[in-house]
Image (cartoon, rainbow, N blue to C red; front, top):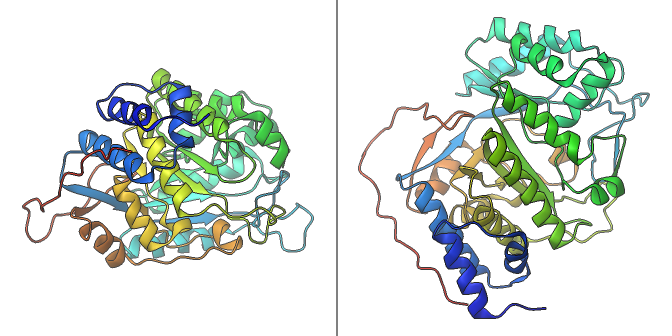
Length: 378
């Protein structure tokens, strides 16, 4: 049943004023096609949460230490079965060289992720973290998504908390939200085998937050999920954030079908991306930051995302292997990222994973003129 324009207007004003949306109300917004009104409401929320004249970005490198994976994900073009001739595990000298190159380009973080390797013991990951931190003590290691952490518990036969504490003590700084896809088991069981289900994905994050860690949350949409299942995903993130407060940011992106076993599905376009991000901003009232996904959407849509609920342009992403294997390749320089932010009226600032500014402001420190966009009436 389609929701009337007046009902949509009421919901948008409710969210913009800081009142919490119910799952049914979130679903009504996702079913609406009034992109301009939804985007303006999301922008109003972002301005309320982030009245500062800055919009942020960071510089990091996605290091995929192995492509061997015991899980089978129909949407992934990157992984290889463990006995595949193209399987690799990056040696330590290569890992350190990649970090050195990242630091030379102004980065202070690496995103360390890989497949679910069946033979690497927990000690290998601890040794890797320690060696990285010994050589680059100032670099944050944003590493190991919940599917990897859950896999480590199975390989080591140790409790989840023990595994996370050992990794933290070895140098792990924060957890990425990868492997979330859609946190609904119907979807997860349909598109992946041998991979963590929803409750355990969330429990990895819960325990990490309980021991003092911070992480990001993600959603990959535009494949076999329903709109109601997108809202269920957001609801589960919001509930966990109410409980722990450990998510620093949320990032969503559209499924990239090329070169995957789901290549027959039509790709979701910019309209669906911007609408879903905007509704996410309205729904996730307790998650402070929303990142644009220019890596999947390209420069112009990634920039436009700053007016549809995002307050962060995401990462320079010096190296990216997973999305590019699915045929989507977008490259931006730091200058282009900064220009994207400036051209929508904000001052660009470099930040770390905890959303602390780590740059020196240059030039005119006065705030640019940023027009206030009214909530449009559908």
